[in-house]
Length: 241
Image 1 (cartoon, rainbow, N blue to C red):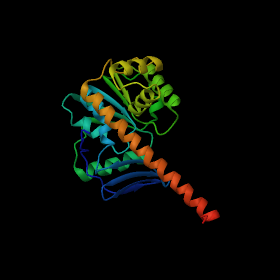
Image 2: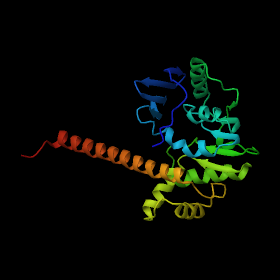
Image 3: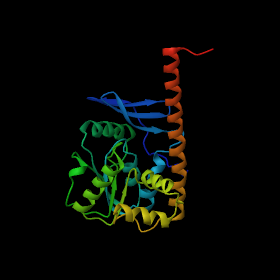
Image 4: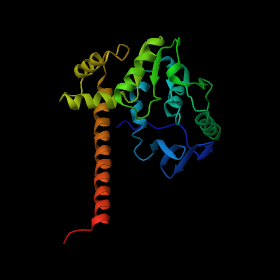
């Protein structure tokens, strides 16, 4: 992994039904009591999902979904980036982010925050479009939304979360190696035009590392679910001797 360091030190804070909880090295963002975003400061694997954006960012970069503001603060520090724009529909998320910005005395003069639903943006002209306002919707739905935003705006380079996960699953399903050849096939199948023409060795290696991380975590979740179900059955029927 590339061990990208998030620039901010986070502090617990709540606004309305949205709450940021810092528990040792785990940072979680909750909405209506449900955790929907986190950052593990021990491994920082979530921040490593931003390798592509950070290596290719230039000029005016539009981002969607503020979350913890990791990618936005990293882009602000990038000398090749002249301006960062983020579209975030949840005002409470914005307020929590600004609270942490103030606590860190962090310079966001290059950052513009716009409180609107990113799915509705149109007629935006920029150099890079980095989309990250999706949650856990079905893959086809996310891809349709990405293509809609691409059609309604003008830019040179596109990347989105969870692009790496989608590409990795495609390769696994079709028994393909992670490579520029398989990346080109995946782009063609999904009709992506603004994704990069090819990936460099660092980016490809990062995708392979993240694929292993995803697999490991999904297996851990599956093992937990299986064991939990076994425990429920044992509590209901008892163990046979």
